[in-house]
Amino acid sequence: MPGGRTAHSRFKIPLTIDDGASCSFTKQSGTAKLLSKASLIIWDEATMTKRQAIEALDNSMRDIMGQRDRPFGGKTVVFSDDFRQVLPVVRKGTRGQIIDVSLRSSYLWEKMRQLKLMTNMRAQADPWFADFLLHVGNGTEEADEEGNIKLPEDVCVPSTDKESDIERLIDHVFPALNTSMADPNYITSRAILSTKNDCVDKINMRMIECFNGEEMVYHSFDSAEDDPHGYYPPEFLNSLTPNRLPPHVLKLKINCPIILLRNIDPVNGLCNGTRLIVRGF
Image (cartoon, rainbow, N blue to C red; front, side, top):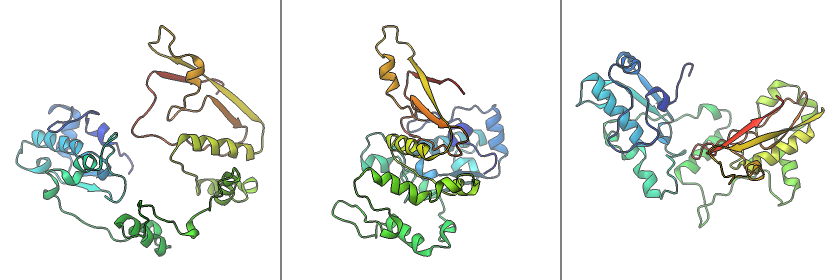
């Protein structure tokens, strides 16, 4: 929504949080005054948030509103999301640990009223796909002994375990790329997503080769902070691919309309101690 903020930024939630914690704003701060005047608080993607963060807001709201016996100090809070999607991330956590930090395990859950939305607004033109997503999310889709689901052929580009698979994938997602790359609607209406940065970089390089124009190559200058003994040589730093940063060798083409972004890791974040500067822009 316009003007929306992340929960950690808006409510000053500590990055490292335990049971019984509170937000880091005071009763005299501007954040406390804003929350005390708010008539409605909407928290999207709540099922991906650890319950300790939501409970921290509850503790702080009870304090600033002066109503310790009412959830969130009597304020109306709407949490939206789907538990069939991504749950909170626990590093190397077990299934039980993930469930323990989810919203359903909070003492607040029994005091919440559940409103279920039944219509998939994004897939109204394709009811079959909407039903298929529900079957997968509800665990009713047929799976093998390891829990793997076989995707219908209509939504797959079959793999042949050959190098040409990437070419077939690009041709399937971006048909007639050379003749349509100047059309903004063509570019923004399709994308290739990947779970690993290595795959994203590989697809990026192959797509850039398909573009017309003069190729420009930029190299990064990497150095590690607080490394007086030189334990991290430039060759090692150049081999790293920190999240949200370009690769060491960045290839671009003049008048190139597409830049595919690497996948952002919400858990690990950036590589600590590494500084990458791209020159030439």
